[in-house]
Amino acid sequence: MTMELTNRFTVPAPVEQAWTRLLDLPAIAPCLPGATLTGFDGDDFTGTVKVKLGPISLTYKGTGHIRERDEEAHRVVVEASGRETRGPGTATATITATLAADGDDTRVDVTTDLTVTGRPAQFGRGMLGDVSTRLLDQFADCLGNQLRPSAPPEEPAETESPGTTPAAVTPPSPETTAVPEEATPIDLLEVTGAQALARRAAGYALAFVAGALVATAIARLRRRAR
Image (spheres, rainbow, N blue to C red):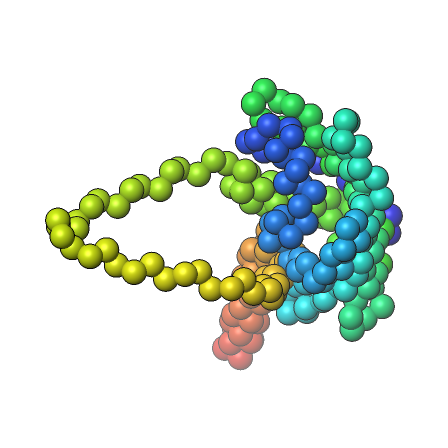
């Protein structure tokens, strides 16, 4: 199934700052729902995406490449593709993001050309479009929190009395290479609200079955009474 998705969001930062952050893959990777960045080298990167369909868990392993970046127009084009690690499903996407000033903030317009095969394709264009919008909203909230200025830390009150020897300062430990944390899988049913709908429908179905059984039992008792 092939489809085009268009989305827009705003982040609380000037264009240049938002542009720099958006191209910093290790920094924004935690903002991508279900995604884990496993490696990057220049414009190339690798990663995994975990998806849940109710009790079924899917893991996509793939690669990506920044095909185009226009510093003046603040436009970037990314190509990515992945395949299920334990299934025949595939996903490929060409994502075009354009940044523009919106007052003191930055507006980001995103167009995604997406092709999906396998079980997620059964959701259809409407639901996948809804999933895309909600996941991008989550990404925008996380990115906004990264870019939003943090409050300056409060200076601790001085409690040392005159003549007191200041405590020794422990030198920082050598830097170590951080191991990427596994991302929480995207629960498509939860994202779309289908899970609550399914539970509600199950309740209605159970009530209907119970009512049918009671009606059948009453009918049998009436026949016996005759």
